[in-house]
Length: 219
Picture 1 (tube, rainbow, N blue to C red):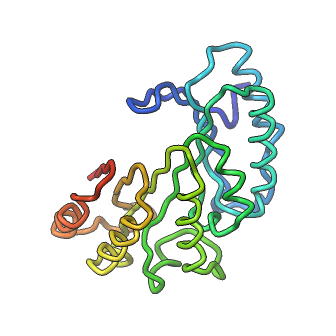
Picture 2: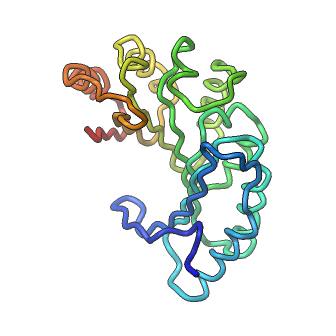
Picture 3: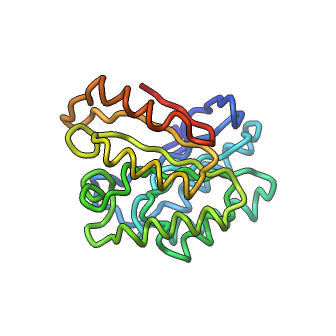
């Protein structure tokens, strides 16, 4: 049988050979993180193949999964102390001090932040209904100050939700406060969403193009 969680090596111009570990709990009733199963796959990979430059952990969207995620990080750091680790996590998790402390031990963190506008936040961002937007924004600011690694923010614009100039301008103001190492922009068209207008894409590039950190547009 093949690996369940480990995916094929990806070659990154910035990070070298990246080994993705993809655990996706979206749309399921799973409320545990498969720590031991993932670690066994990682151990087996290290026995048989050359170590990657980064292990890349994806799919942490819910606080209930975080204890298992933390245990996996600790096991990997104890077993492979020189291995660089990156993680993609839901922005809402950064409102929690205990989460920020654990993630600070990583070398690379990417979060998805589609808007900072309270009126559209819960439509544009995946998070619990009771998540407090201000707490999340404050948590991201705090994490940026605490984190010594590479920090990237990823934004997707969704038709008729956050594809308006107010959202873009407020997001830019916030990004200038946080100053991540990298910011990337994409357009979401899945789940029956139609593409945003070409005019909006042009305005997004005009507004965001002069940000003082690495910037990429994938449209």
